[in-house]
Image (tube, rainbow, N blue to C red):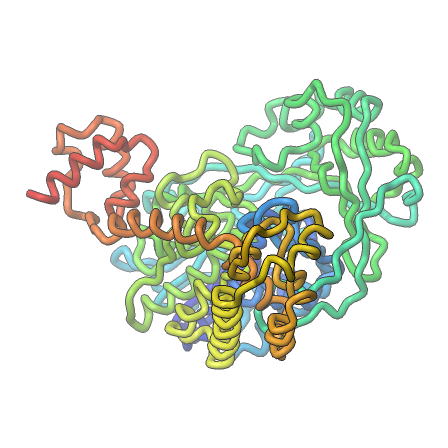
Length: 624
């Protein structure tokens, strides 16, 4: 017996959930297959969402009509805006989440999404006909047919867990690995490799001396992930706590290094450079006498805490011995040790920018299967894969975000153009247009695109329209309202700002550091009246206007730079050249261009090993 669907999503992690809901909301009859329906959107590592650059991705997912931002707000037990000491292009929202409520909230969304079914089982193989995927087969022997399949297998493909010399097959501790899929895809010509990631020990808070820790409280301001005003943080807010390792801790760790899978040859796969294990830290940074640790709650009421910064695959006894040398953990009890996990991934240069595979039509990859790490990176890929799978089934132009439009665009372009040599993690430094890609303006960048897809409803467009109208009104007022020197100078001197020699427009004053709209509203009555007329999302609108005013010069300059590159994005070269026959290209460029087969001249220019001279050669040939 065969069951028929438009789209099948394999895996219900963060990528799978976003992919399934997006496809279903666009109108595709969708099936989400998972090995455990009680572990939907499980937070395998830290129960937190967002952070530097990752928070921008979550805001973008929300602006596209996705769910991660909504779930994160509803289940948040602490909120912080990171990088506040820097400019707004670097501000990044982050929440600590209630792990169990996160799962419950996601499941509620999935169960109440029209066109979306679930099935608990393990997919053992794909059904492929004439280089096109047509469905899947499961371990129970059930066959499902589909017009498109999205694989979001996370760390489950041939997953192997390491705790010292102990090895356990599994995708997560206590959950089985998935077998068969990698071998089938390898036989079809896919390039695959192994990666490694890790997770820290979980600690019983009742055994911790919190008086010896530094408290890190959350923030209670208006910021959040979702642009929907009705989505709020309602859970009890909890603190995180800071501790430090010491030479005594490092000595205990070094004594167990000979049993570390990372150093005894047991693990041979690629690990994350930007989130190293504690044993890697003491080896790589041997001169450092201490490392910062964050003790973070796993839920609103639970005693379980996550020790951020203490990821490890060392033997249980070594982990425990080292922990007990941190004063606050002298009598520590743990729920489970840290562990490392190895798993299969596929070279993402085998994907089109839509995340469809080049080898098999209508087969999409999203998440850690592409060599990325992080819930946010996975969710961003998931919503894009879901959108494009629906388009493949029902018609329409491929949906691709460019590097000047979204961090999601940067992420996917990096993957399909450059590939990965370690687990890929998003940073603000990866985005050359980060002044354009701020967390505050993701709705302005993406919501109208989402509306064109049918993901953002009329209500979201109305919210965006009202926000943009109010921001424009404030900027217009600031540009035209004159401030007299004799009236404002006493105030400027009182806050340590240079007095005016003559009158200026309010806009000019607002470009000064430490002067913003709220501050000036206290001394300029007409401005205060204007701001008081904003009836909804006042803080968000005022902040957006402030940023537009203060950084308008930088924003315009970056927009000009992005527009120049966009012209190259319009020059399509896919399948136009046999690169191996162009002898004026460098040998490396011929190999890389043949392998990637870039869509545009702009993408070709970003391929490592393709020089500006090689791009000039291609432009000359196009001119001919």
